[in-house]
Length: 328
Image 1 (cartoon, rainbow, N blue to C red):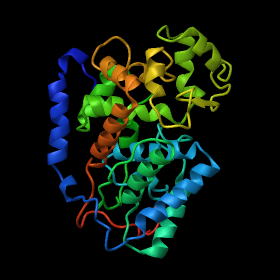
Image 2: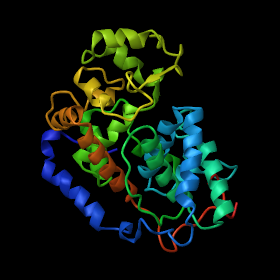
Image 3: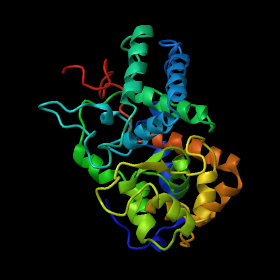
């Protein structure tokens, strides 16, 4: 990941322009919200019913399904390469450092894909399914909806190295976060709004131990509460989890930003969005004050991310099984 010398070297105008270039360039123009209107009219109700069922069984699953979408799009575009299993001759992304023992929800995607192969076989890509699943997950958890652009095809290749290099670790500082999003054609507003997805979901102790024991930019009472489930010694309780938004980790709302203003961000990278640098502090304040504004900007940011390097036309394939390429 390319590091930036200083956030002062970036202007909001440059970052905003990056979003405009993304939206008007590349193959994203071939995507359409009505892509399956005739070929698979049962698509949306079929997907949503299974997502609702999965979240009703385990509320955390909505955040996990949303995370699958993020972790795919930031690695060579939204092509569902992160759904592919390893084989004796194929190394996928599931065991990359940011994904191993972390990504989950693959069985739900499998169930949805199987259902789609019943109602419209060979029509809907795994790439499009995950885009719809992420939207439905947010809506079911109380967040905003948006029109999902469709027409993506599925990757036949993958890159564990790209997953290791392109997914921001929880230790990133603000410079690195801005650089990462800019390198993917996303703007400052996309960065802060998309990190608002951390209003749902869980993080493992191994990813926030250093913050709650060693950092000063943290509310002491909050740190003490988090320490009760995350021992200070590495190797003890590494996989214990706590909510990224400790107030409402299964409700999609704006309390994540309220927490940041109180120095109660669980991950180091979370709190970097409100650290006195100025670039992101004002957006955090805006979203903390207005949930409607956060919801609007989050929906726009998800559409922007969904436009990242989609495979369209004759590129890629429509996988019959999301875990493997068709010729396996």
